[in-house]
Length: 175
Image (tube, rainbow, N blue to C red):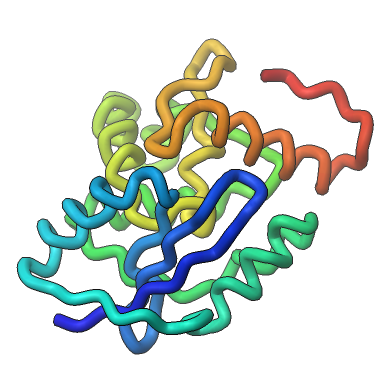
């Protein structure tokens, strides 16, 4: 399987964008390239990555997101793979508005199983497409930041960036 890769410099470090001919298959941080490769290998088996500048215009859209145009990434086409449950979780994540958060428990209830918060957390941790599928918008029931595959500092930055862009500068951040 041949996939395309591009590297995008962002305010939170280099981003790796992997796509097939029609959609983004992975978006991860440069320092997590081995994690991304493991997820791709689990999904595709053997694959190769061919350099491709700004596949599907995703780099341009990420640049707009980084400048505060948060809607720029909303409708980027994705090809996540995953189990049916994971796909349901990842689809639900895309419904969380920028500048807002939810909890693992609330997301589990939204999906129809209040007891599935751990399963939601596991699906969140395996999200192959950072930012576009905004798993960073899920926090602990106590309002605190919990794990993020890209690191808590990036999660904090993304949430602050989105809150500032939606509410205006000078907002007191709750995390």
